[in-house]
Length: 236
Image (cartoon, rainbow, N blue to C red; front, side, top):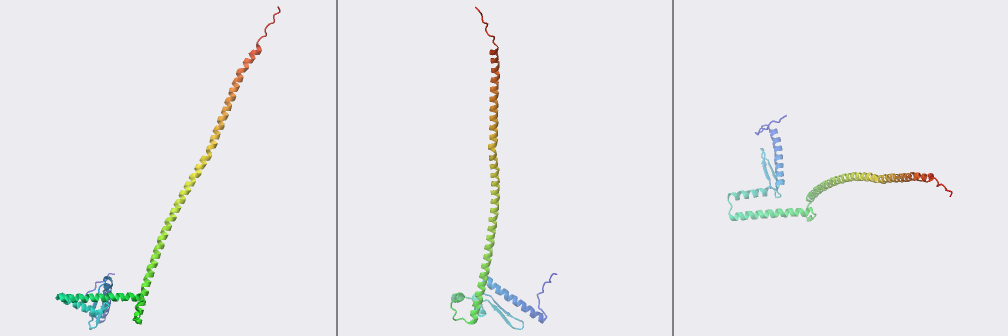
């Protein structure tokens, strides 16, 4: 179901108006805080309810007062600022930045466990929470990095396994080809032996045939010699 557009006008019901004020105030302060964190900006919000109650928010370490003073200086400087006034303004601005840098450096030292003697219980508890949060974030980043490395190793392992499978297939093919070639080579001498034996048999048969022919040719010659008549003996 489509929600109707909210009409921007004064809410007449007192209870509804207070509820809306509370919700919208929280959302406004949340947006101001996000703007300061995301853009590294100094943000200040002043808000008065219809009953005259003051609500304010500032993300500056020096709180709302210094933010208002800076605003006033800049506002006045935009209207009219002499050379000396500009020098004073930028001098104050430089001092403010130096103080901010000093505070950040001091906070870093305290996070490292240094210069803790002047801190109270509440400050130490705050540092402890910051360290626990930092340690938690570091562990999360470390765990995620470990998971990513394990996944990468698994991918590489799968690739190596696939390569091994392909190599085994190729080796099996080569082995089968070698067996086939070996069987062909082993069958070659038998064929040559059969041919040689056949040739020998043919030579022997030819030699026997030649001898037989010579024998057959020599038989009639001996017969003619046996049939010659004896010479007559003449008695003189």
